[in-house]
Length: 249
Ligand code: AMP
Image (tube, rainbow, N blue to C red; front, side, top):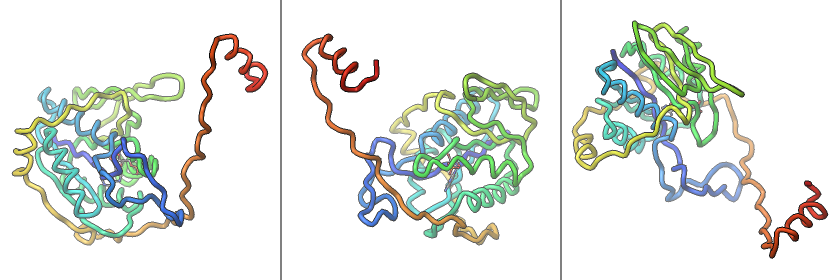
């Protein structure tokens, strides 16, 4: 069984982002970039399914600038077999990403398509669902457990206040939630091996997709600064402040 995993290059989760002075977006100058954490969980899940003998090949796809090759190589070092970079310097929207993934799925014919539940740069949470609609395929979003058995994927989904288990016929789309697994670190020999794994470079035109987006970002703002805290000397003083200043108890 083939698995296809979509990975996005985003600002590293540990970086404190700076908003550009003109509020047009986030300043990416000299900022560390990484695989989107939810995509890393998707790669890890595919690798675990390969280790269990369920999956035989893992193809990693990224769409974006040339440097997204770095994130594909990181996924290859974690255990994926080959990569496809759809290279574009243009801004690209969720629908266009989904259209490109649809074309790749039609070519590659994977039975499992794994994505992150959302990319942490714009928290869009749309590509998996759009891809499901475009392909007419079953989808299990926000997965916290995945089992593949008897030609079906059984996915436990994290929903408000509980869990929902769904059975999907293959090919199926699974989007990963935080608790699905804890991704491994790539070992140095695997990082070296990943350099030699195949990586195809394509363009959106190869798949007949026009880049761009129908969405215009009007303004990006940093959250309001938190006020500095005060240190209290005793529990009594704390209770007094909570009662009489904050008025929360
Ligand atoms: P989003 O809907 O943009 O929050 O992203 C959800 C998931 O779609 C991500 O975790 C990736 O698996 C996939 N995805 C989004 N954008 C891209 C991209 N440019 N290249 C590859 N995968 C992407």
